[in-house]
Length: 144
Figure 1: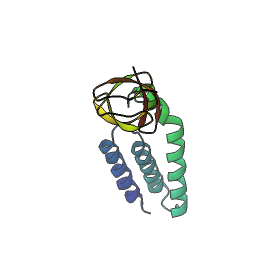
Figure 2: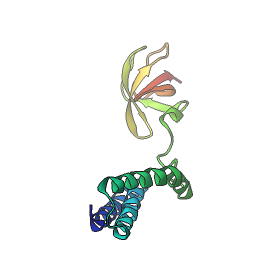
Figure 3: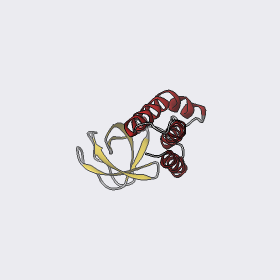
Figure 4: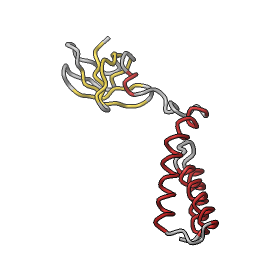
């Protein structure tokens, strides 16, 4: 490939980072493309397979060594809020009657969830219940 194709590819990948801000994947791929473009300009007789190998090596090395510190620097490592498992112990509200060992809907944090009543008493609509376990998108709840 010619040097200018690498430069265009690098710039397009950097622009892709602007469309997916905070991921810091495209930025390193784009920088790798720009570096290979400069090397291809300096060493015009470089084989295409060498260029692709260099691009791959630069991309992987930069991702491995620089992405995590950059994410920590900008405080983006835990930005998606609490994990689902942290719902354990919170209080949900039954949106419908849920029989013992039955499945229904419960509201928690403004969202409707599937809820499995693991208690020994049925839940009635609008009754508060405690989340005891989370299995995928199903809350295991028990009457308060």
